[in-house]
Length: 80
Image (cartoon, rainbow, N blue to C red):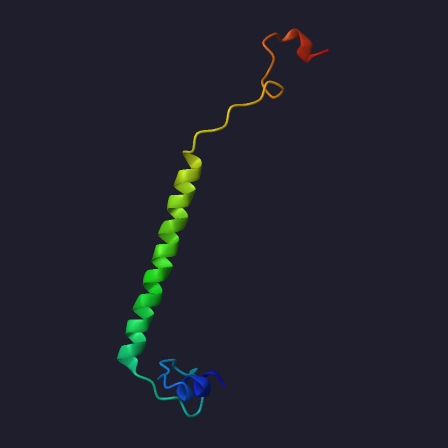
């Protein structure tokens, strides 16, 4: 089990048990709140990164079209 592996390595798990568990695991509530704050910070950084990347892509200069993709100057060959 994950908790047992952490304890074997000398790490104190700060994972709360599910509400439906009859005998809940003991955990440090203050440590859990601190860990949650760090997790939320990383989630916000990922959101900001996604917004910045989207902004960079939308304002990137477009590559010039090749001659074959440019519309012709005369409209007569359009319908032929």
